[in-house]
Length: 79
Image (cartoon, rainbow, N blue to C red):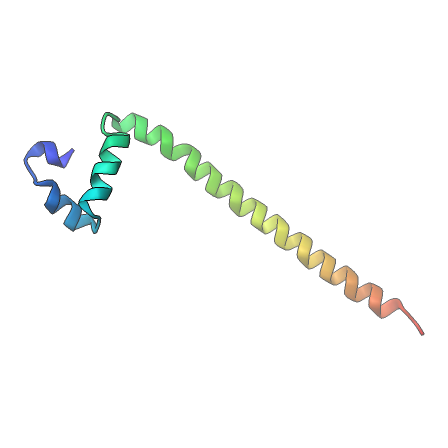
C-alpha cells in the first residue's frame, strides 16, 4: 500500500478523487487483503457483468420477437 511507503493518505485520496472517510471505510473493510484476495473478488464481479449483459441481450431478443409477432398477427386479421 502506498501509505505504507510514506505517502500521506491525504495525497492518495486527492490523487484518486475520494474523501478521507471513503479511504478509511475501504481500509477498514479491505485493509488486510492481499493482491491475490483482491483478484479473487474481482473475478466474480467480471463474471456477473458478463451474465448481466447476456440477460439484457436475451430480454431484448424476447421483446423484439414479441413485437414482430404482434405486428404479423395484426397484419393477418382481415375484417
